[in-house]
Amino acid sequence: MRGGYLWFRMRNAKSNLCAAPGRIVDGLPSVVSKDCSTNGFLWRAEPDREGDWRTVKFVSYATRNAIRPVYGTGPNEFVVLADDGYSPNYYWSVSR
Image: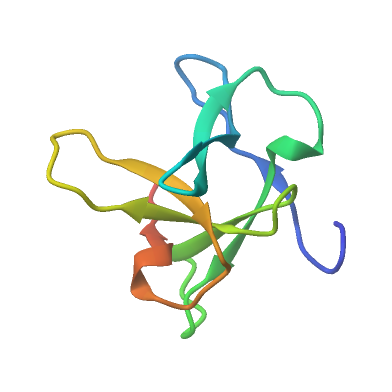
């Protein structure tokens, strides 16, 4: 626990790589997969305003920014780290 939050690593089950801040795309840092190491790979999950943990926002320890999708017209979209906002675009459905 750091700063009152529980921090964790998001590790891909198949590749064993962790989500981390990456290169700049459209003026914002993207989220990439890398070998897991320092605090740059730590994230916190925050439930939606109703406190429902099935819908969460992921915030980077390194940048203090939240993961947000960038909507475009191509078949493969990407996500960036943007200001820690409250838009529905920041929230992700989480399931087991």
